[in-house]
Length: 450
Image (cartoon, rainbow, N blue to C red; front, side, top):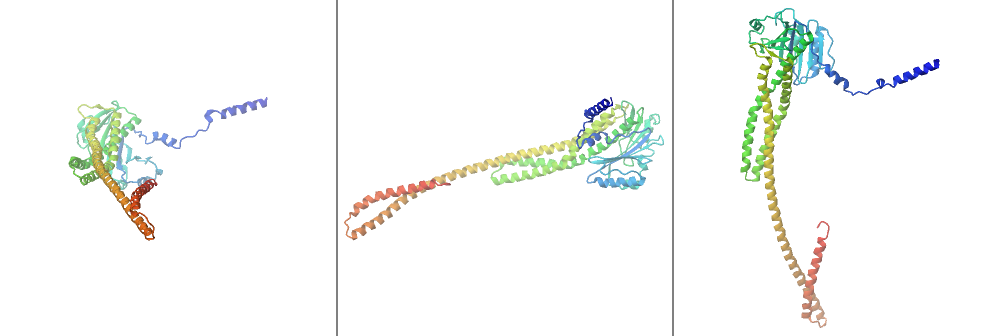
């Protein structure tokens, strides 16, 4: 009986080992990293009331290690854990505030979060709790900066004039967001500290929803400034682009008035120089304009996430941003498209000029071949004349030698009719000479490479 039980247990273990759930699988080397990308840079969970401050710096030539070393100074000041080497984000509670650092492709964001200890909007900032010396030592200048104040709807006054005092008396814009669960207020102007202010009146959001809304607003401001980086470049390129277009018009107008090959080479050199300048401008601006297109798409996506509705008598955030950002984006888009069109037109003009040059070169080659054909014909006729003279000369000298032979024989007493013999010899020698030259000519033409 015990043997039967052992046999059944062994079979069960064997069946369990052969189950597909226990079959070892091989995963892609990047699987874990790619899967965990879904969970990187999570939104903060924010209570109400809360205060946030965020600024962004553009990398340019800033290496990750230099930026990390500056982060270590803040960590050491508060005796907290260091960010790991190669990390692209770092979240840490520093006691008096929570710190969030994220490194993106072109920029890095530094976010500071605290709870609000009073109901007076913007009476203090989360950034006030950061050591000033550390802020002054940032490795790059700040591109965008934003303060967000989150208060409950019962703590924020309804009077708009009182709200304006929180924005240094500037004109306000506002909207209901997230299906009227919150109100968003801002003047969208720089305050005295160089930051933009946003006030959120929480009318029913939980901490997760509050965190997602705050992150959306933060991203809107950062992406907006990154998009606008392309505007100065577009304005800088516009005068040069207009000048190059005028130059192309002048060069193209000269093509039909060219007189010789030298003029065509000169104009082709001008087109080549213009093409090189255009290509250089394309290469130097393409990344910036392509990045602007990506940021523009992200801004539209974030505005849709807000699900805004109007506040009576006030402009919404979407209306304001689309009205202000779209022209800047369209300007860069137009400059980029004009550069590409200019490059294509230069290529077409160059191809047209090259075709003209090739046609003229072909015509010259035809003339040269015709001249060579005439020269060959003359050489053939001359060669035939020389061959006739050669036959006559050979015959003359051969008959002369034969006459000397007959004279010698006659001197030794032989009676030879010289006139008759010479008369017969002349046509024989003439025919022999002609046949001999013809055979020589045929043998030379049959040789390889002849």
